[in-house]
Length: 148
Image (cartoon, rainbow, N blue to C red; front, side):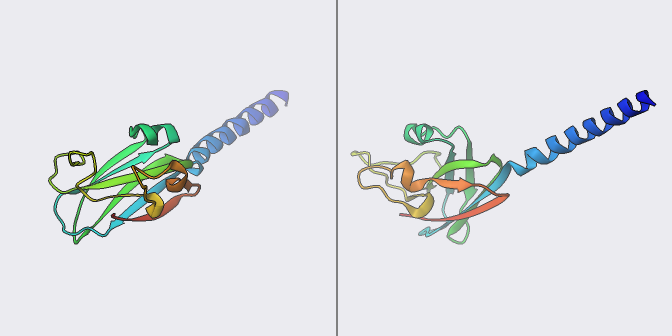
């Protein structure tokens, strides 16, 4: 009788652990959908970067996720799956000539249209992290960016 109780307890414990791990992971990740509008034409790509910290955003090094979305009918969409719940910033630019980088003039000012989450704008440079940060705290979050 004691052995049956131990086997039952062990079985229930293992099942609970499996259920917790499989649902726990799914509950702590979500999908971020970024819709971009305001393209002057449908040339090239929307290059989209997701930053998971203020430091990464300031450095311009998106360690979290990047996407290259074709511009169609003057709009684009990038979908980022399995992101951990948390605070993120999104930056993007219209890579019109498909060279993989944002073209700038001699003074370092972007020649290609760009945008950020919350449609935030900077005065001399990119907007502050506090203005662009968004919260992913559910299974799906959709944001819209309008090009500058």
